Image 1 (cartoon, rainbow, N blue to C red):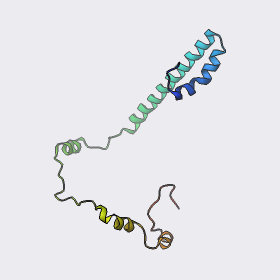
Image 2: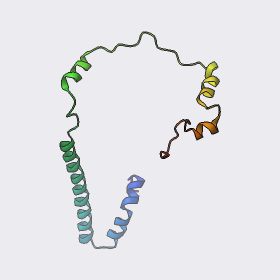
Image 3: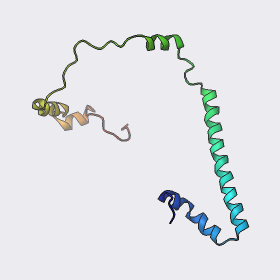
Image 4: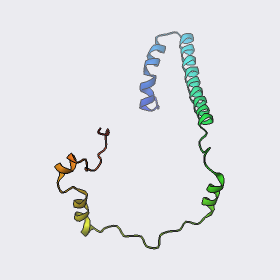
Length: 120
């Protein structure tokens, strides 16, 4: 029984059907071409990524002295952190998120943002 991942089996199934109907030499050449093509594709992707990194130069505008100073400094925590609202205040917090007049707030574009394409 084949112990490959199901996705891998689905991807290789057409090639297996094709190679099973061919003689051994042609099937071997076909598999070699697939392997060379995949290796070439990965190589092209890596080369493009390296070239893009060399062109863009991420971190070019970052001053190393500032980074070292930030890494060496201690983190100062605030002296008093407000506690999150308890379960007894949960209804108030939820109601506070909702507008009192939904129709007027939508017409006045004061509604909270919703996920999806931005309305123009």
